Length: 114
Length: 112
Image 1 (cartoon, rainbow over the protein chains, first blue to last red):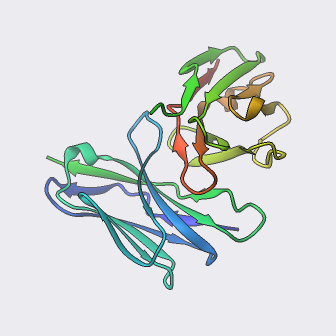
Image 2: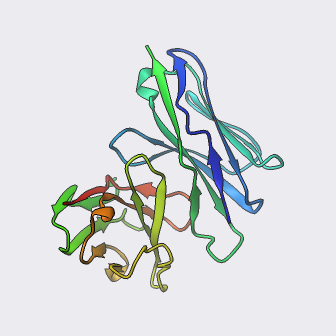
């Protein structure tokens, strides 16, 4: 059973701080990882993809991947109230018969306080 | 470019009625997925289409649910004899092959 685990939160940070969102996955065959942002009442929006160990930066967002520890994180620098949303972590595995599926975590609710 | 579109955006129906939900994927995307998201819950995989291959229907919760994809593009999810527990947001996503999925705005279904 492939699983992606996230702390449901809520994670509350003050405006301007760094928000750190974490995710672990169970399938060692997972190769690709994605972070989606979902505002309340809206659909998930892809914000970051990461495929290799290490850091990947895009603007205020940094995704970090550690395959040995089966751990993915998303850092949001200079957090803004507009970053308040649920963040979904997803993993894709090339192994097994359903290698086209993404396994989604249940999401972490982030609240950025002005 | 145009993203994934879904219609209707909202659907209210009476218990026992049939409903059809439509998804238009991003042009050129061969993979199409349907998910269901109940209030405060995670994404529940329903069905996957890839090109002309047989779909993966393993996530459909009952035989009241079915889906088609015509011409490798537009997809319709049909729920027959709707029940109150079918109330949820139904999300469609498309992908150029596998990996990254791009979601439509969803259809909010309410069964009275």
